[in-house]
Amino acid sequence: MIDPQLQSDVEQAEGCRLSAYQDTRGFWTVGWGHRIPAPVADWTQDQADAQLTEDLGAAQAQAQTLTEWAALDTACRQNAV
Image 1 (cartoon, one colour):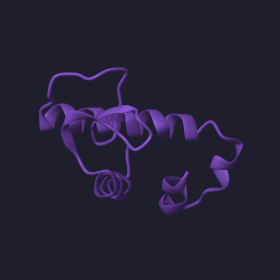
Image 2 (image 1 turned 60 degrees about the horizontal axis):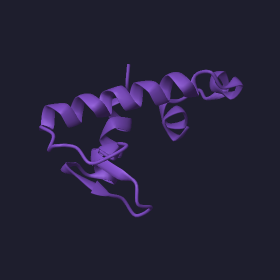
Image 3 (image 1 turned 135 degrees about the vertical axis):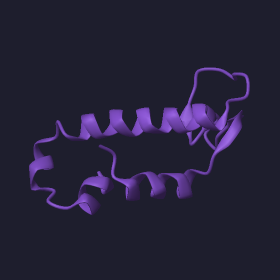
């Protein structure tokens, strides 16, 4: 389960744009900072929110494979990873 504070922090830091744009490094991006290979049609808010949930879940699953994960004993520390 994604920590609501983590989701809130990402939303606040990223902002949501429903039209594809190039980020500061030139990568195509849409929604809550989701990188895409090429521009796409505008997204709905539901699409952006669903993609954020998927992205956070994938990042969390990857982080949990780190040997250090067990030592991260608070949600704050886990969210930082």
